[in-house]
Image (tube, rainbow, N blue to C red):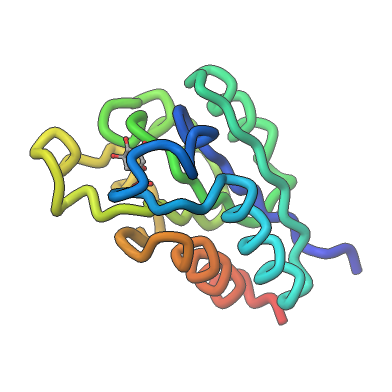
Length: 148
Ligand code: DQA
């Protein structure tokens, strides 16, 4: 049987990880985080696809493309987390598991980061554990989709 596909989505500014506010986000790059998620996925027989864009429309398109194809979406939407109702609607129309992911803990930061428009359409959220979150998100997905 084909391996289940899980889509990891990365939103705006995450390509700057490693240089961007290391005191908040750490020194690992996006590539490091994706590698960590990929290794965890491999251990569960999951095929991980990764897509990054700074543009909301690109992320909406990838969520549409995942419909009926991917079993789960793990999404770190960056700042779009806090105001993108189009990502909210696209995820609501996705029929698989959705995990919201953040490196930092937005609830412990500025008030404008306390609202997430992603969490109401997510099965669960992982935030505040830095790069470990990428592994934890895959563990959660593997359990929810019944991967090995
Ligand atoms: C983030 C948290 C967001 O508030 C912020 O805009 C980001 C990164 C995180 O991973 O901690 O760009 O999603």
